Image (cartoon, rainbow over all chains, first blue to last red; front, side):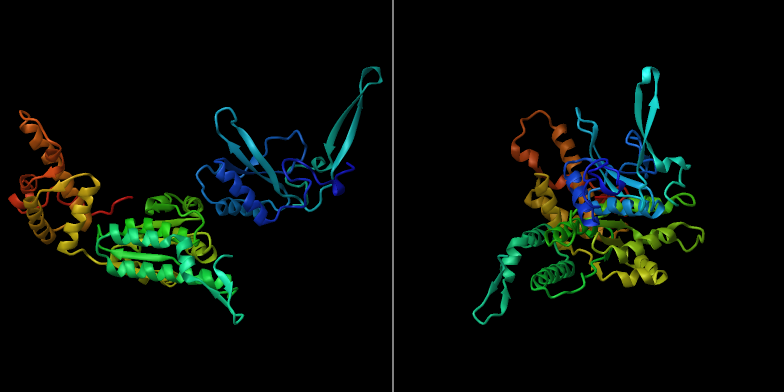
Length: 146
Length: 313
């Protein structure tokens, strides 16, 4: 991907920027809390763009008032899965929305091998393209060297 | 920065008065004086803490670094002396002074912290701590956390997690422990780590007869009632008798007594239904509403034993 140096995956908000610092993460969480959204920490080691349902780190945090508690969970998750992708999602339960309103990555593996392009030839010399993360060649939990 | 100015000599001066006005803390302290009767030592200590935090803020403006002071507190005192009420105010004061970010109060007891089986306690305690972050965690009857008679009790685990957070995340939350003096002392004896991490031990004195009467009037005013002049005298007598009886719970006993007086007043009004009632009738408590209490007739408090426990906010 030409605009994306170093094979960094780009999903959710801020993913073209350098990694967020803890202070920036706190500020984003603060914003979400002020909007009345519930925050949730999720992790995965399958970076495919169609992999929308990541593993949940605990339950969504509906009743926290302060960002420090959520950053604490992020850090706990980082400790347990230092080489996974971890993201923070803010869910808006307002009727009519009922959907995540924010989602941003807060932790990535040290090495991101990126994606291979798979060309499948079908009838009449048509070609179907798809992406395949190199990391998923290996079984779960062994994909990023841990 | 409005409060920092260069003076002619080139030294920087800061305006304590302006800072005080800006923080609005004076308003809360005045409210505390107005709405809480008595409790002189408690109010003095709260003023001291407020002053310390304010001066600390000014020092920070002049880049005089100082470690953020520990503000974990322990409130000891008999039931009904206003520990929970003050804790609630404390959260507000600390918020106005910028010491805690949100200023909410999370009140918990042993049940909310200690789990029922192995591995249940740590997540439970952490959950509560996370909820309290940015505010004040109020642990009522904290001595129940530690049960020396049962060595497999999980309370110890909760205490350890608590200590760790109290030490490492001082910026994130303030912990206030509350309980009766004697039991609290025993708790600290067996947990010296806890004692040393709490900077402020505040003792809530019992109320005097006059203070209790003032509290009663304040409570009635809030409920839009008042005593008739004779009823006030009778209630003073009631307080005097009640204070000597077992299970006297200071302001809480007064509140219960007033609730029962209201009940009797309603009953009295209902009994002579024949005539029209004025506004005066509806708001006034008469001596007979109070005299009907068992404190006068039998020399025993109504509902014995039910008001000595601690209340919830």
